[in-house]
Image (cartoon, rainbow, N blue to C red):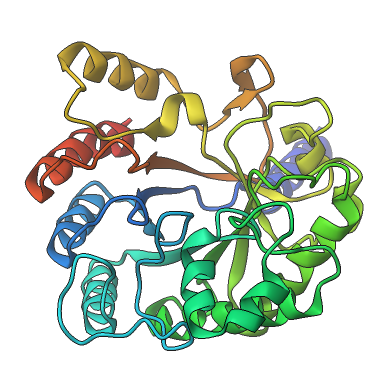
Length: 344
């Protein structure tokens, strides 16, 4: 009886010391994405947003600065430079000040560029700089997309642009923990040409991995077949799944990809002067109702998945309806939702 009792104590001790480490879930990060490509945000407005993220224990600010409308950060490579404050892009000094302020608050600033689609903003700048190079890299299908079909020039230009971004966003406080978004969403032809698409994303991912950045990609152009060759170190930002041809949350989990929940039904918001109190209450209710494991998948906005590789969630503020909003109106709008999201 004594031996049996001792055996139980030993087994219990082993379970208590081993299982938590084996089964512990990765750190859950909650972040905020701001679309500064479609709507101008001043440095001071972004600092106010960072301040609130910090106050409610958020992890990061993700800056979506590149889209079809604009490329809104300083770029020596694209000849977009200015020392003076302007309403077109953040200057080098403004970006440095924002990053320094955020890091003091223990908030990482994550750069967010879209490739190969949603690229018209920077492609337009490239065209002004070098017409021939522009024609070599722009897609024949659309002037909003980089040609990702085994185009060495496209890969070279994309890698140069990414490398510049990596340097500008370098944050020693988060050494070996930094992340960058490289896009991968809404890519025309990506299902039919999955091999070319995955090869392109893998190639541009390499430059970030070489600098010890972790790469984040959107889920909606990746098929189950694509998962066979997609770099497994990539974090998947799952916002929605419109087609059964695309990989599901389960597919990513089975292949051991880390996933962050960007549920487009609950966590996508569009600042606008037309939004009233009723709209706010509906959006607030959707945020409160959602949780880490609820994903927007096919025809269901709340499909539940469970896995220790689900390690983050994000609320995103897109700018296409915010043209008439002042900086104060923008900050007030965003602040009201950040509090709901980060305290939920």
